[in-house]
Amino acid sequence: MRALSAAPLGADFWKLWTSSAVTNLGDGITMVAGPLLVASITSNPAAVAGAVFAQQLPWLLFALVSGAWADRLDRRRLVVTVNLMRVAALTVLAVAVAAGLASVPLILAVFFLLGTGETLADTASAAFVPAIVPEPLRPRANSLMYANVNVLNQFAAKPLGGWLFVVAGAVPFAVNAVTFAVSAALISMIRAVSPRSSAVPAAGLGSGVPAAGPGSGSPADGSGSGVPAAGPGSGSPADGSGSGVPAAGLGSGVSDAGLGSGVSDAGPGSGAPDGVGPADDAVLGRAVSAGVDGDARPGLRAEIADGVRWLMRHRLLRSLAFTMAAGNVVFCAAFAVFVLYAEQRLGLTEVGYGVLLVAFAVGGLLGTLLSPSLIRRVGASVLLRVGLLIEVALHATLASTTSPFTAATMIVVFGIHTTVWGVVVTTLGQRDIPSTMFGRVTSVYSFLELGGAALGSLLGGAVATAYGLVATYWSAAAAMTVVAAMAWRPLRSATLRAPAGTT
Image 1: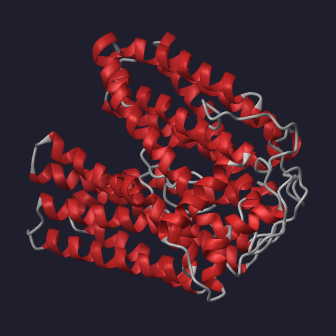
Image 2: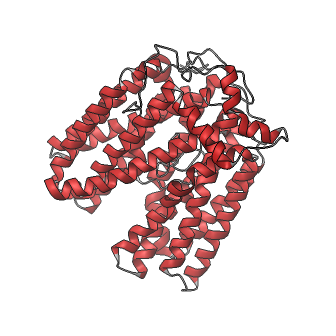
């Protein structure tokens, strides 16, 4: 614990952390109460599933556009405005439920609006930590942000959401509205975080990325969007508006790459974009800088293309993006049928299944405590590579065991890995991505993550139906082995400076 509290992180960070804490709790409550509300109105499985899909769909539709807007606007004002809009949406839903007027279309519409706001708030707030926390302290800061996801979103919020719904159907949504209002107030007290105000990261820390170029500064967010950094469903650390659904976010701890992307190994410490120097960075950052300086701004499509181009030209981050997408396909394919696996393979009751899910959160909390010291002592490259092996071991263990204890133990180890992985990848992105392009580049990550998760969920059900539950996990282990083999060499270039003042 000393490693998490050794050096001061500043008042702005603790405002951000508190905002993340309350919104992670509130969002976790809603993600439990939402399906319960739909189920109380209709027994149609499609309608119940639609409550979750309605909040995920905006990531597929608007993620890239939201990233461009996050780079155009003052990020603090954007997050505050979006949170207040979410307060309004949840208030309408709470009043409708209390008055007995709630309907499935209304619920789906509100959840779609929440998801749309999430794409903007999560993407914008991902740039907060690198703007307000010095680089040597970011691994510890990111670990603390992930603690909100693991403890509040994935652990405390689940039973609390169910209990509040039993008390009164409107209460969970009213509570979530209050958490967004509190978050808006806290974020408004943080100094403005816009493309022009973000700090410039130190160059040469093994990244090879120049510190020059307009606004080239060196996520934390809070919803899921995990992630990654936080992606949809992962409970991204800073904003807290992710779904917190284990099958959606925990697999995003997978990393990296290349998978057909033509990743070339550059050698240790060369995380720089392929052939990108200060002049190129200036060109790729032109969209936002032009707008800030008052000159003609390129169109939204051109700005999005710049973000995609920047990511594709960065060896390490490109590799991590494709590996995370591929890893999500594998993980979500396996865990789409996890409830059936727990019942039929492990022989667990509903209560036992709930306890098994808690193992994810336990591992995540341990990962939060261990991340700073592991990064300092072991190094980013080793942690990422070992993480890939843990991914393989998870699926192989679940395929071969019938012991709930063995499965739970492996899940705890996996939970540690996902948080450590998330902290490492988040910190790498904060160091290397120019501030002027942070929204666009991280939105590409989110788009790839959710796309992989959606595809994996479809494949998992198909494989399990055709070949059985055990075959699903053996297939996942084999696929993850291929992902690990292709990502192995590119990951050796991942390096981070150890956080200062940790022990």
